[in-house]
Length: 198
Image 1 (cartoon, rainbow, N blue to C red):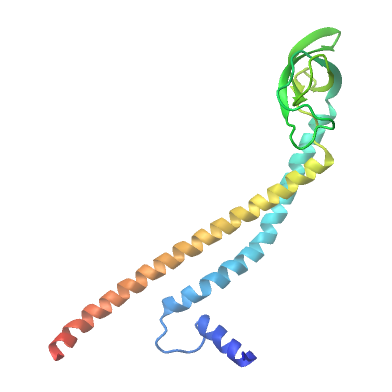
Image 2 (image 1 turned 120 degrees about the horizontal axis):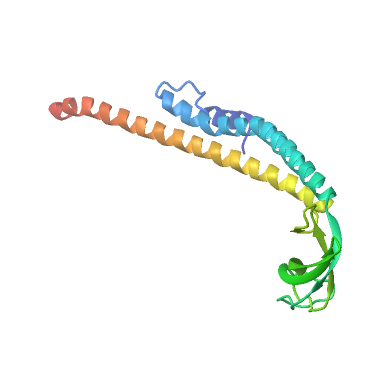
């Protein structure tokens, strides 16, 4: 049965706080690497998430401002879009660019427009144009904008975790090399006396 005293003893021994005279400074540093990395991750994680959140919101605001100037026109698809033709365009559909014609500024225009896979020729689809008349992908929905914020935060936190993990791994590797060098030096100092005494 594990008691709180046994747990505390194990924890202090693992963190190098048990006053063991044989414990080296490198042992202490190695023992505190993981807790230090976790603490730094928790503190910096809040800051990184906040910065990523505000950066993504600023980017979303710029995208929404640009999208407000767009206008929609009907376009007639000229060729069949590759892919399955499904009612409701289910999970097996995707967006592809196909030739189409539309009227803008009193003139007939032609070009590639985004359509759902399986769209038949002659189908009328809505096309978004910017101020200069260039075709745009459909504006981002509120859900897509929220997803961009979430993905940005997750990527930022993942990057921070990878960076801190890499730094902790490099520090552990350096400590191990230093400890091996110290053991080697100690052995070279003791080995001649040991062989002479034998």
